[in-house]
Amino acid sequence: HGQLSPTFYDSTCPNASNIVRGIIAAALKTDARIGGSLIRLHFHDCFVNGCDGSLLLNNSATIQSEKEAPPNNNSARGFGVVDNIKTALETACPATVSCADILAIAAEESVSLAGGPSWNVSLGRRDSTTANRTAAGLFLPGPTEALPSLKAKFLAVGLNSTDLVALSGAHTFGRAQCSSFINRLYNFSGSGNPDPTLNTTYLSTLQGICPQNGNTTVVTNLDLTTPDVFDNKYFSNLQVQEGLLQSDQELFSTTGDETVAIVNNFTANQTAFFANFVVSMIKMGNISPLTGTAGEIRLNCGKVNNSTGSDGLLYSSM
Ligand code: HEM
Ligand SMILES: [Ca+2]
Ligand SMILES: [Ca+2]
Image 1 (cartoon, rainbow, N blue to C red):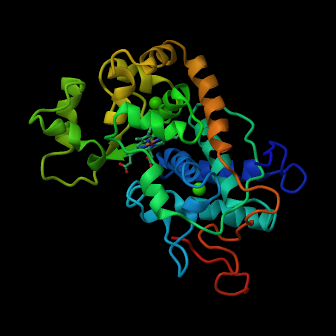
Image 2 (image 1 turned 135 degrees about the vertical axis):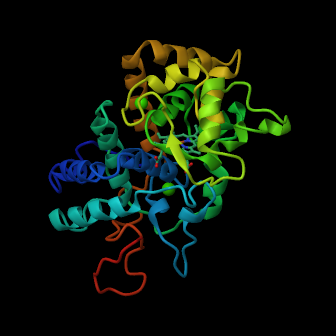
Image 3 (image 1 turned 90 degrees about the vertical axis):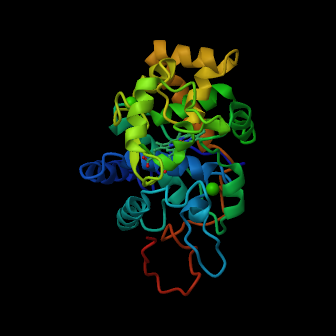
């Protein structure tokens, strides 16, 4: 594929990153989890047909939106903030910055604003004219998947076990719904008992938040220790059996797996976590981008250009 470059918009939209950062900073004032929501959009975009903005397209006569695939439906969020960013960038530099690049920049700025590392984001992705709901259902990992299956889904897009552990560290911030972890609380794998790798005190807390037959859309923090800070507490939580999702805890509780030592390293050394996280984010951001003249620069992240006319108006993608 064509090369992405951190200097791609230096002459055409030199303020792009600052504009993105400003809008996320404003959104954070009323929505503490928006940074987590935005980095997850970049992940869910890149794993399905590459980092091409496919996730952002709404249903239309020709598009079956990925937003309605099971891993995203009633779960992926932050689309309104992406639209606000796009509107601001269209004012500053019309028809220049792709929606796929907006997600990549927003991921980095979200991590940085939460106290995590900063890095030079590779840019120059272009936007797809198609989406693939079926692929989103097949290729995105689920919270009840076992470690071999998680590894296979990452390997399928060129990401190794270190990338899997480092990128899972994004669960250092953001929230999850009871529906994403209730399988661990009462009847784990048909055992009639909770997941034995769940700390019993934490189990009681989670059972209080997610009672049997209760509302499974209630959310709780992915990182109980520092819920809104981008740090390495996610990994120390795993060592005391306080990972929220089964897919989190498996990284540490799968005895004998190479991922255990990686968790231990990231717990002991936040600098090592940050350095690996940056490398892995850049790798993830490089998954099959559209470059050069492929695809387009969407004017509205929710719609393919000119799909209903050429009036040049921006439509809400909410
Ligand atoms: C290893 C496989 C992964 C699985 C199985 C997984 C699964 C999930 C699930 C089930 C949720 C909660 C969704 C809900 O309840 O609505 C979630 C949230 C989240 N995920 Fe992951 N995830 C994985 C990897 C990643 C990666 C690689 C990133 C980013 C680099 C990421 C970032 C996030 C963030 C920040 C949230 C919170 C979003 C919010 O508050 O809106 N996850 N993930
Ligand atoms: Ca995509
Ligand atoms: Ca944290």
